[in-house]
Length: 316
Image (cartoon, rainbow, N blue to C red):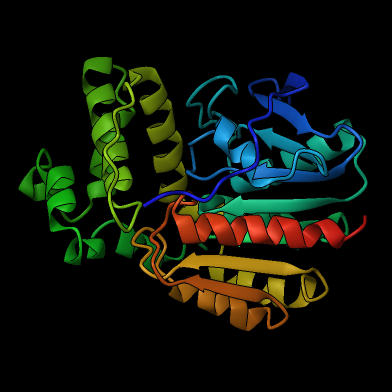
C-alpha cells in the first residue's frame, strides 16, 4: 500500500506562539505562498497537534498554509492543560488567528476531531469560510462515543482487550472514567503508562491495514495528548452533534464542501458522514471504498488532494 505523492515538503516561513488567555499560548505556523489563498488546517485528536506531513495536502505555490496546535496540544503551552479548554474557546482561537494574520476569508480543512471543530467554527462564523474540506466526520454524539469505547470491539477484540486489561472488573462499565483517574494522576509512574496505553488503542484501529509504528514514544507528549482527549470526550467535546447538523443545514448551504470518508473507518464510522451529506445536499461526499480512518491511506489522501486542487479555482 503506497500513499499518493503529497506536495513537496515545505518549511514554515513564519512561526509564532500566541497568548490567547493568561493560561494558554498557541503555536501557529505559516507555510507555502505568503501572498497565496489562505487555508487553515485543523488537526484531530482532540489532543494530537500538527505535523509536517499535514502541510503537504496543499499546493505551496498557491496556498498560504496555516497550521496551529490547539490549546494544550503539540507545541502550545501549557502542554496537556485542560483548564479553559473547550470547543467554544478553540473556535475563538481560530478567529483570533484570522484577525492576527489579517486574513479576510480562508479555506477550512479538518479531519476527525478537526472536522468537528471545522463545523463548529463554520456554523459560528460562516462569512470568512470559502470552502470546507472535511474527513472522517465526528460529531461526538453519545452513540459515537459508545462505538469508540466499546462497540468497536466487535471488529478489534484484541485492541479492546489490551485497553481493558488493567481495568478492574468493577470499573469496566466506565472505561473512560477509569482511564481519566489514571491519566490525571500526579504520579507520572501511573499517568504516563496509562496515557501510552490509551493512545495506542486509537492508533491500533486507525487504518484498514495496520501499520507498524517504529516511532520513539515520548511519555510527556503521550500524557498531554491523552489528558486533552479524555477531557473532551468526558464532555462530549462540548458540542451537541444533532444541533450541529441542523445548524449546518441552515448556515453552510452556500459554502462549497467536500466530505471524505473511509468506508471502513473504525474510529468514526461512515454513518455520521452520510448524515452530514444529507444535511448538506450540495456537498460532495467521497466514500473511499478501501480506507479506514487515517488521512494517509491512499484513496483518502488522493481525495483530499483532489479537493484542495478543486478549490484553487475559488477566489476569496
